Amino acid sequence: MRNIQHQPEQHRFALMKDDEEIGYLEYRQYNGGWEITEPRIMPDFRGQRLARLLVDHVIREAARQGRATRSSCAYAD
Image (cartoon, rainbow, N blue to C red; front, side, top):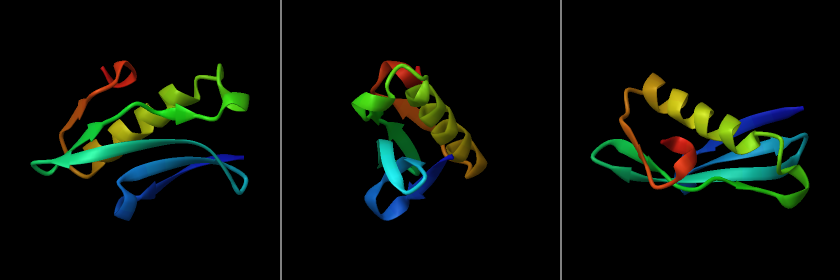
């Protein structure tokens, strides 16, 4: 089972499968918003659209919190 955990103290979201981290996305804070950086997915899990899942989740979470987003990666454009 996959889930996404926000780790605000590290400015990142971790994509978990059971108890294993299989990917993550870091962000930078700017003027109360988040700049999304390139997602990282572990090699064994690539090709499953997990990077897109992770980016979409972060964008939705930012909107839920009333934060603007910008990106420094193609996935978030």
